[in-house]
Length: 159
Image 1 (cartoon, rainbow, N blue to C red):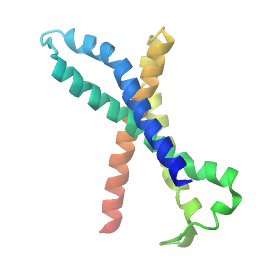
Image 2 (image 1 turned 60 degrees about the vertical axis):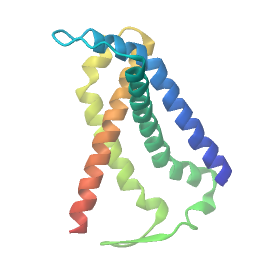
Image 3 (image 1 turned 120 degrees about the horizontal axis):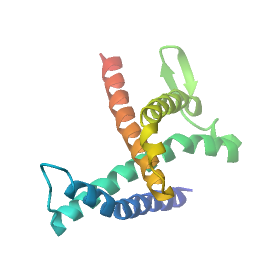
Image 4 (image 1 turned 120 degrees about the vertical axis):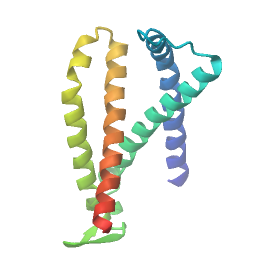
């Protein structure tokens, strides 16, 4: 099982970098067309831009994988939930598989809000590929907001 998870993580890394590479020409074109401040991108800056976009997309995919992995494990391995460690919360002990539910709900709320606010970008796009990029960018923004909110929440709860 451990090797299988590592292969999935490697696949997600390659997928995120590949989608970042496919997205790079559109992003570079947009950056070079900014009025009043056109940028001329060198090969080095394009490479760094590819790494940045690829890592953002990879982070979004990893976050989704991390959230839905417990659900998949519960569905395909009913024993999995009972073997997880228990967590102590202010409401008492809770199983590891149920400990993930609030974070999944929080992410879905953040994604819903971001997608609702960004729906105009989605409606404007006519090509299917561009709609995919809009959804992926909204997912990446949701992931960043979720990570920020979750880290602030954990800092507040540690006080």
